[in-house]
Amino acid sequence: MTAQLKIDFVSDVSCPWCAIGLSALEQALAKLGTEVKADLHFQPFELNPNMPPGGQDVTEHLTQKYGSTPEQQTQIRENIRLRGEELGFTFRKEGRGRIYNTFDAHRLLHWAEAQGEGKQHALKKALLEAYFTHGQAPESHEVLVKVAEDVGLDAGRAAAILASEEYTAEVRAQAQFYLQAGIQSVPAVIINDKHLISGGQPVEVFEQALRQIAAGQA
Image 1: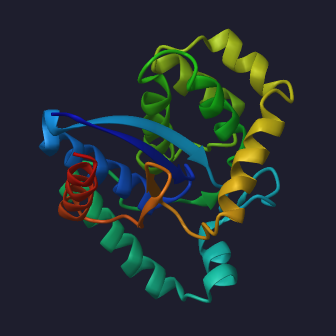
Image 2 (image 1 turned 60 degrees about the horizontal axis):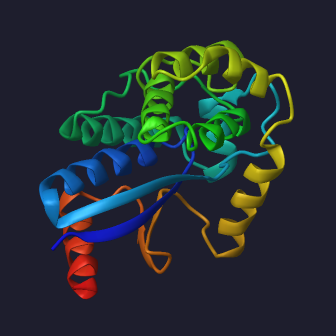
């Protein structure tokens, strides 16, 4: 019997551990095969909601935010790159140059959810790759429209959304909901509205947790 699992993947497209967590979750679901049918939703979380246009130098930003040194950041970046490599996700060796505001990316993701099965998932993956693999700015409307078009979404409609305030209220409300629920770091993977898996966990951790939750439904 196949267990139906609702999975809310709360994350930001500027979060490297979210790219790792999504890759690991996807592989765990693939291992579970027909044991689980996942209803996957991508929910907004802004790591830097007050980031101005143009972003900020990544070294400067991480030093201000976490007090880490450039040397520590280089080591963390290499650890992230290696974790990604194990999962088949490519992080640029030189890392990110700048940190950007991602609110418009979240508006497009909100719209994509209603555009057919798998479209939001495809857009999320493509946005993570645009930033972490290709070094493109997720605040750029030109980048966002091109990424949307590349995954089969309507480029004209995407551009119109970005030029307006469409989905602003909905995304703010969703982001606020998860903040009020106590989510302070991402990725936060919420199963059936009650089970939380935090962080970019290994494939085995996701697989075991999903299997236990599915067994509890049986």
